[in-house]
Length: 224
Image 1 (tube, helix red, strand yellow):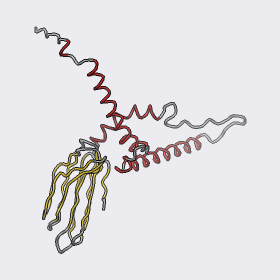
Image 2 (image 1 turned 180 degrees about the horizontal axis):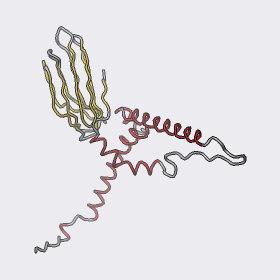
Image 3 (image 1 turned 90 degrees about the vertical axis):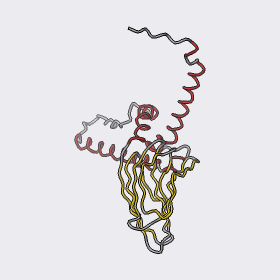
Image 4 (image 1 turned 120 degrees about the horizontal axis):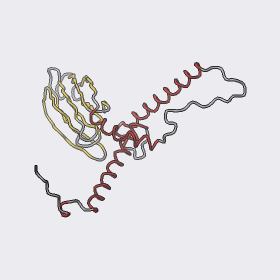
């Protein structure tokens, strides 16, 4: 049996170091909450970053769907209980959020939402025909560290391409190529934002680019 030696006070983090780590974690969590969770879950975008990343539109859809579901539930209850005795006041139907504030719900769901943004899986396929000299850009909306598998082909022809990302004032170029017939790999977001591909047809004939993606991204959109 081995007895582990107790750490000395010098080996343990100081109160100041623990406090600093806690403050940094709280600031980072707050930033993700304001820029990602609030826009994508509740259509609340105090900074405007959510709109730039396409997250606010997601939140608006979710909010609208929740309201429609509640209206359907109330209509169903009214049909099930159509008769109200004279002198008896009807009570308003409880909403899904009754007894719970928005802040409580955000705190309850924050950890799940942030983790889901990096692990949620979706799959898409898109084809774009480029005329001679024409360019097109397709982006995935991703959080930092999220990964997406991709493969694209020029279907027998060739294009110039630039795989890059932007968002929150940051920009990055992952890979560039000229006269490429296809490409594939794993795209890992260096930061939260839009990450994807720009293709340009430098041939004298139309070129159709077909892109297939699957992985942790919340949306795919053609930028131009």
